[in-house]
Image (cartoon, rainbow, N blue to C red):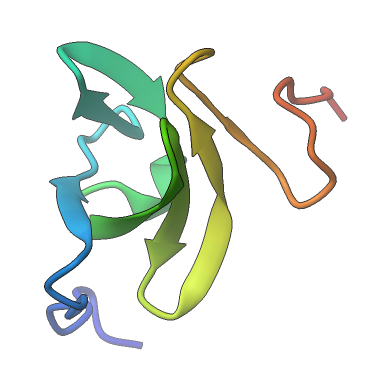
Length: 84
């Protein structure tokens, strides 16, 4: 495995954000947690409705950002994460 992935490309209609080492992105002057797994990489956000964005890491959909909550929901529609 390479230590660094080649740059990911997103369509022009996407907003692209850098994921910081803490796993978050800046969105509307606030921090939104994405995942530390994506740290130091770029994610793409595609607006699907007013204030609702699909979040992608390359071709992989990570979830859906709701600006109202400033959180990303998972594939089950949960805004909160459960500890394992």
